[in-house]
Length: 100
Image (cartoon, one colour):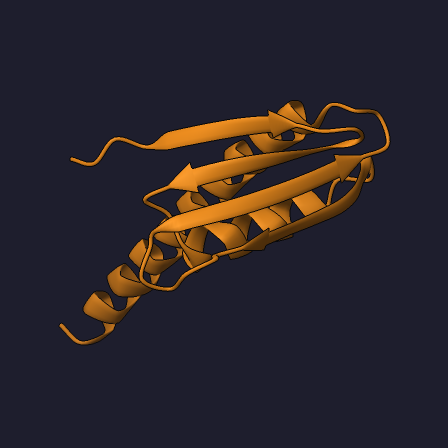
């Protein structure tokens, strides 16, 4: 199992979170969930080199609580994943019951 490593770099009015062993999959999900927060002014991510599994996430907020916004984004991402998992389980159960 790969350990996840996150480096946090606080700058003037934004924070850059560097995720190791992550790529566009987590970046897109976090960007979507964090951007839905009304206190977030800007959120974006990049993967500098496709061959390296490093993802930089930049969050700028109106209230300066970027780490809290990241934590809420991770929590919301987990809830979305659970919702999709439940949706596919129900769909498979319905399909299995129809074709018995």
